[in-house]
Length: 208
Image 1: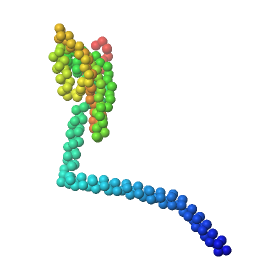
Image 2: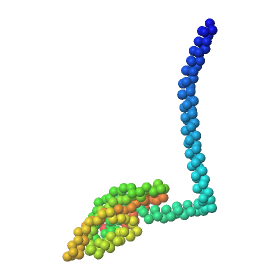
Image 3: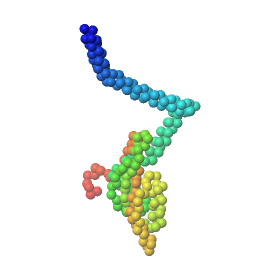
Image 4: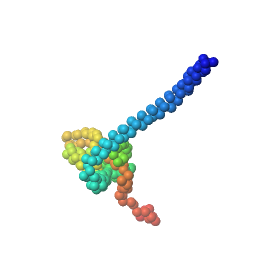
């Protein structure tokens, strides 16, 4: 009987150990792993906060000037953005080509351009570029002046490509210019319609 009782105790101990194994592996080890991961994350956060505190301490003397400097920075950003149009719709492109025709005293043919992003800015604004190809006919000196003017015009534009066919006998330069007209897509700006002289309406007789 003592042997049988002792055997049952051993068997019971084995069963208890077998029952404890799933609890150990599925419970304790998983919680231990989660704890260690959370502990590692907290250590990283502490290190990051300590670095931020040390960085802020370096500029403690200028903290009071930050709001004013930030406001000045925003004003400067807006002043820069306002140098760009927020859109170049078809009517804007037509007006720009008419402007070039008057400027260079020549008739220009063109097709409407397409807009593509150039660079994403830190505040979410997007600098875009509209590609516009125009023709020209001028003298050699006129060509140089045209290129120089486009590079310094208040309407911010760059020349991507240019073709030149020069007739030295008649001093005539002809070709095409591929222009990149810059646009600023920003919530700080609003679209302004082009200033166009609208024809009079409401006349009783179309002949007069």
